[in-house]
Length: 144
Image (tube, rainbow, N blue to C red; front, side, top):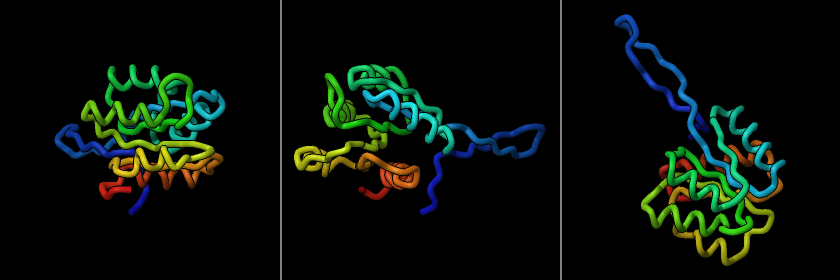
């Protein structure tokens, strides 16, 4: 499957079909400002418009206020963890694809998320290629 982070929208203009690219909205939650900035820039390069927040509580509020095509979140953050954020999201019936990042993925985190669809893990440190593959797994219709 080809990795694509933008969607095409077809509209009518003067009686002809015109395709335009519409950037997808993404939410990044990471308590490390450098990682948040890096992810915002990398995702922008791939066609996303990313909002960045520094903790799980802020991410929870943003997710309640707006629709996002993707959530990229760290596991360990002050307050609400990434795993708690994902559980809350799914409990609300929100199936937004999620990339869950961590420098150490515990057995507990892996077990807690093993049955959640549209979720991919990303081990820190990561390359742009690693990020692309994780996003592709998260947005894939096949369970990761």
